[in-house]
Image (cartoon, rainbow, N blue to C red; front, side, top):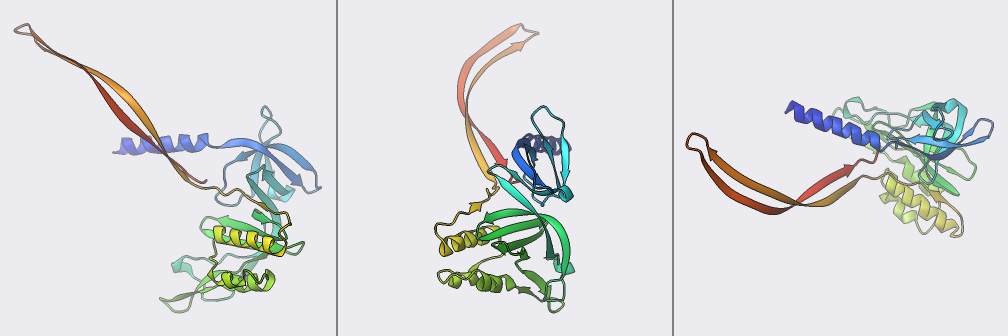
Length: 261
């Protein structure tokens, strides 16, 4: 059993490694200079604070730090923007819930993942199980959309869903206001809302939407032909029995699960 577990662990590591590539990208430094390069795409689950890059296929690998980079993008896939923001990092772990309803902010410099860029823009920060969404209007400041789970008694908890009031106040479009109360604090519904809002206020406005990493399950059918033959021998009596040969046809299935990160 241990050998089987080790085999699959090694196989998973090899498959995961094989999906990591240096891909066409660029980054903007503190002096607003653009460097076209190849960035190592590790499909970050948690937002990075640095990234590896090469100026071309044959060059040495370098590391760029958040303090030196304003933004970076893997072309047509994902873009990160550096911003100093107020973020609430209150835990959602039931054993470590805050007893305060209001968010407790700390100031941090982060790479925020751009989900929607337009007149209203949406960003995401994730660190393990901590997920926070941010937004800004035009050239305004980037603010967190407030969502917090907190404890009211030893066995009871509630949710601060102030993000819905923020959307109603700041992203005001008559066609969509009735839908805000049903929006979950998740990437897909918030992304759809921001896209629809931008279209609502100006159908001709330009906006960009990041590519969403998604898992996939692939099935490949593998037909095969088996040739088999059996010959029996009894050495002491020098007897031999040829059972003949047979051709069998079969079908095999190859299952592949591709993780989103």
